[in-house]
Image 1 (cartoon, one colour):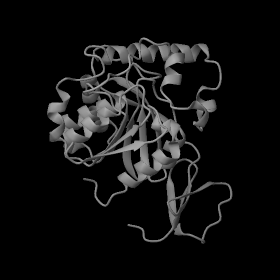
Image 2 (tube, rainbow, N blue to C red):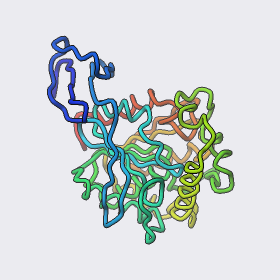
Image 3 (cartoon, rainbow, N blue to C red):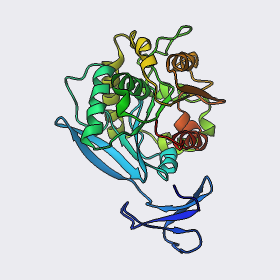
Image 4 (tube, rainbow, N blue to C red):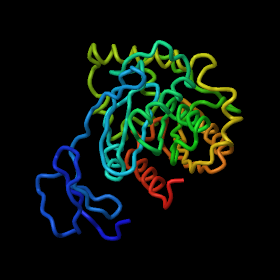
Length: 307
């Protein structure tokens, strides 16, 4: 454990060269950030890799340094290296794959359920040699993460579940996301688009033909994985008590896609979990409140023990 402020220096290609006490180094051409009392110099950009898992090529963003953190995206697809990932990668090596059948990843014609996707990502962990990573999942990615933990809790360290589907709400219902057009759904997933720091960057231009093609592909694969039964596994709740990994559940108070009551259901089912609800936030906490979200994740994953 490091007890003094350090500057972490890389060679511009993601390789850590040295760590020196604050004040001994001048690197004007490197990106410098202050995060939780640390002055950090690190790579400007992550790298993109294709990880082969059972013959399926998985497009993956990789960046940062430290313990591995596997990040699983939601039904909208992989948004790339967004602001919160940039912050978290100062302390963790982030692996952010694109699910098979989404984006630039290969299809897996045999994959028909979230259960299949969960087993696939346990295989991904082995193929990428991640050891025992922390796992963070959003929406259907959060459901996938929960299923993975019920299958093989020992393969994972800490869990962060962000507005996961997977459980049928005791009151209310999960929004039928396939009823609405992608443009309609986009405005329904956030509480207030005007307050989203990355809104213009992510969604402020008309979609290109490639954007439309990828969105259509993502939608078709999401439907294939989640349609029957819609967005939940009726048996998942029975197996959640098996998961003793420290777990942080994050929800937006104004989530119109998945009721916040589902967060309470997950909290009751997972014996070592806590629920944090963000005010004035919808279904996309990592995008709507990236700085607050990154702080929550860093504080939780930076606990004294991995289990």
